[in-house]
Length: 292
Image (tube, rainbow, N blue to C red; front, side, top):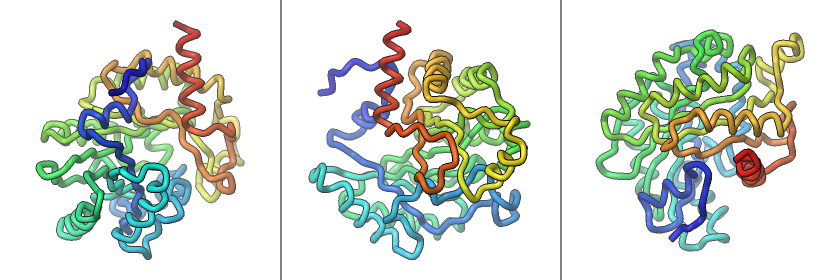
């Protein structure tokens, strides 16, 4: 049993409620697009988005889901041969397609050896369910609770749409996660921390957060070059203090999956802290203990 004392609800401990063995998410690119790219909700996508930043090398649309899972398992299996896996539909909007196509892709993933559940990353305006037969966590990109920010970054939806999707998903008994970006243009330390209280009123089980990163090839990178004064890029210690302040204003039972994101160095403009996720988590916990 896990006896480590933690200062917030960690994702690995959350998974132990559902699995008696170690599980690992394997990212998949199932070839979906996004309603914010194809004209349904908007064009051009979110201003910060370059999907190359979070797709591993094995995650390519020309490969079948089964092959991506096999290559993903090979990537992890040398460390933990007995590991089981969650198929993580990550790139773009993974409920954006015909229902039969969605079911076929989800069922292909679940039929792979060692796959024990699904995690589906999506926008807050599309969803179908398959919760009765497998572990399912639906993760919504909320990004901000401020409609002015959402408009500025070309999200193509309001916070009300996100809240409605979270509430309707959770009301069906589906584990529901949220994702936010801290430090979007126009937002301050105070407005970011205030967002934590708003999110805490939603029936979220898990929350991912990460720092704003400027990525090559995005519209936001161009905006930064033209108007750097509109952006505040956090130093690592400043961001750690923001994260702790944010956590203190969150509902204490929320499971916190992540505080930072690491984009490939060749795509990252700023900020480049040179820290791995576990190193950042260690620094957060150390600082929390210092602050009592």
